[in-house]
Amino acid sequence: MATAPVLPDDLLIGAADEVAIRQDLVLTALGKRPADMLLRVERLFDVHTRSWREDQEIAIKGRRIAWTGPAGTFPGTAAQRVEKPGLAAVPGFGEVHKHIESTHLTPEWEAALVLPRGNTWTCEASHEFSNVDGPNNLTFWLEARRHGSPLKIFPLPGSAVPPTAYEWGGGWFGYDEQKGFLKESLMVAGLDEVMDWPGLSDPTNPSYQRLWGMIRATFEQRGVVEGHGAGLRDIATISAFAAAGLASDHEAWLPEEVWEKLAHGVFVELRPYSMPEVIPWLIGKGLSDWSQIAFTTDDRSVSDTFKLGATDHNARLAIRHGLAPEIAIQCITINPARHMRLTPWVGSLAPGRFADIVLLSEVKDLTIAEVWADGRPVSEGTRYTGPVPTIDWPEWARETVNIQRSLTADDFAIPAGPGRATMQAALLRPFHWADDFITADLTVEDGTVQRDSARNITKFAIVDRFSGEGKVAKMFWLGCGPRTPDTALACSVAHDKHNIWAVGSSDAAMALAVNTLNELQGGWALVRDGKVLATVSYEIGGLMSCRSPEALDAEMQALYAAAETIEWMYEPTFHPRWFPGFPERLIFATLTCAPWRWVLVAPCEQAPQGFVNVQTGQVHPIVW
Image (tube, rainbow, N blue to C red):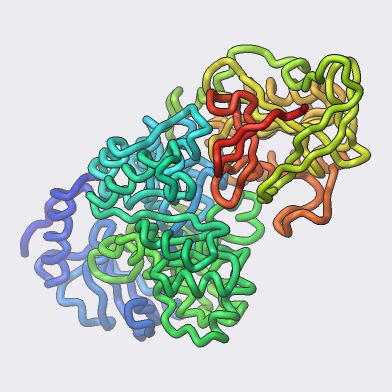
């Protein structure tokens, strides 16, 4: 019997060593080299044929599957035999599109959170950390795997770096950068969601050449170009979206929109928000081929993951709304793997793939008994038992908030015109997608334009955290923020550029909240009456924390408890995704992708006051 070589067993090593691994798997499958383990299960789900195979064994070599077949028929020997009677084996669940930064955990701790919930591989939609530190982006996402984390992270460098031509700082990606990423690692699967539709569809847009350069680089390396089609629903625009080579959309909300995008060759990645309406509609429509659909988490915090689950929640939700469990499992395994061209490594329980196995005690509700990753068990139920490597994240990951001064109340004041008693003001509110901004008459006191809490008008600001200057863009905000006097909330998660935002009932409180985040190097800060009520630390990139999910959740719960002592403004006519109480979803109110129009960004050359229409590049005064 031939002697097996000692091989590093991972995609990080490159194509040559990948071939050596597979040569070893060939000889193991033929019985000419011993397997490390034979795992026997009651049933094994074949995602390729959507069928169950009874009493099966899986031969594991290193981190991979070498052979599968009926129990007792493996032609070789194995160093260890493990039996799992009564359990059904399905492939490790995959995330076709997720921002791990939105869990707010570093990748090694993300693994500890999601692996026990079946999620063994993730396509990281990497335009969050890359907007903070573009040059080190790929290193950041591969570091945990290099240190031995069982979670496979397939980075997709961000097209939205920067999100629009009216934002800057932290990173800039174009043709050369994307070409380099794809050549550097087999783990890089393609290009993260192309969101700037005006930049892609209008040759006069200042982002046009950069975006098409990244798409060209991705095509050259046979990568996948992910899309973002929010609000793009008419047939002409859907056709243009598909013609651009944008292979997917995770922003489809309406059933008819999903159907049209499927019909135009777009792979649809359904988020939980739209499943209750879309899944029953597609079943009623008679959809028989679900291979062009996957389920995606996109953004979910650690606290919400504890409450809901990870990828398993997405599949359970689909099952609850009428989808067969077997199809739901395909939508989180083989379907996303095929779409992302990762089937040689993940998506099925088949030879050559990583030995990532979810063992279910009950299939119809996806009750997880154990999760295996890299050929070893990593959970008992939803309790993580696998390794969490110790990573000493370097300064480039920890020192990312660069504000070289202390901000004051004057930084947030909005001066009035000479001699004016009132001023017209531009207002926005969360998820304001109208062509025009809102206007209101506001009073002037001591030469500055004032808030009006009686009309739910407060103040919102974006503080540049990249240049060192701490430049501030500020405006008035409708129906969202603290009504309690001398109170402010600030956060360094501000999709997708991730400057610091602050909302407050006084300028001094806003300054204190931002200065607190500068000291913390990112996170959340809630202040009232000149005191800091609560903070949450996101010391890595200003987006994540290097600690256990339980520890981070505990700090978030303390923030929520402190927030319950504050009276928050609320406009019940807002978008249905907007909820009363603690305004956590303000982290998304600074998005500049479709269908947003007027937004507030950090001051820049194209928008000195920060108020800009990202569809047209038009700017407008905050008050006049």
